[in-house]
Image (spheres, rainbow, N blue to C red):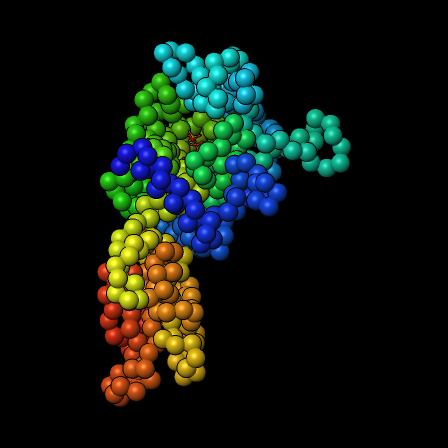
Length: 453
Ligand code: ATP
């Protein structure tokens, strides 16, 4: 695809997200809050499906991982020890012409001269560090002792609670602590829709191990995480692994891989998988004076565990799911004329609505009553949507556009009007093939459930 085609594709995706209720600009009626987004009804379902699946495979299906839900407000000492207070910065530059604040490492360059990407101006200030953390104040007094931060990552509460979790879970190395939650960064240039936001969610695992296991576990987690993206339906060909060169890695990291996705606006990071050695725990041991080490019963050794961290962004993954799912093909309209069909090809596991239920006609009481019965039957098993408005083709199209994988139509056959053998059967339509099959209502829960797990 050309740059122009990619830009058009992105425009269509952003507009669909708003039109169908996936993602809205936050505080939109007041002009919007830059870099902050609200998820609408469908976006919320999609995001929840993603988080639940991550939790399922990363925590519940494993013996060696437990969960944590840490606070967002963070003691300054934690972020001082982790290095965020002093070094969590981006280099910032001001354009003297249009007054834009810019990230120095994202400036355009023409013939070796730095340019403002906003106005093309060349009169730029030198770069100075800008701390990305949001600072707030706890309690009524405004003195420096009342400063707290909104966490810039979920990881630090895991390190700080390492000993407590170890004591209560009685886990042996290697084991991990997982967390899903909000993080905040005062990004200089929020952009590319939700890709770079100021408020976002992370799904992080800190997997603690013996030092000699670190490199093997880094390779292991990279593989696991790629598999995860495939399992949620992201095409492998649009995923890339960047082996981050040593000079670009944090000084304490012995190996870092970025898992990247080919968004319409370019190849960008979805997740970092990093071997962070024992840096984080050691920093907190030093700063707090408390022990955060591990005693191995068998070897009688006491040591500070190393850690491998797969750190993924919920919002970036949701955006990748949306970009990957967006497709256009053609389908016949009510009169049989071919028209463009927008279809979100979400993996059924991720789709916000799993099954739509349509009575063929809204003014036939018996059809409506049967459709409501089917709705009640499926509801305990999955998220369903009842729709009786408009021609059936239009109703299918509305569901295709939001990626509903299955559609059930209740018609006169269902009522037994075309032969007893068809009574209590419905048509089950597949979003991708648009094929319809006749199935018994009583088989629907099992049939659809097996395809959405
Ligand atoms: P980038 O280089 O893109 O700013 P990063 O390397 O600073 O990202 P990490 O600190 O490794 O990111 O955070 C882990 C994950 O959290 C990222 O891979 C990404 O998915 C997510 N993330 C980080 N910053 C943002 C943001 N501003 N908006 C949305 N997601 C983010």
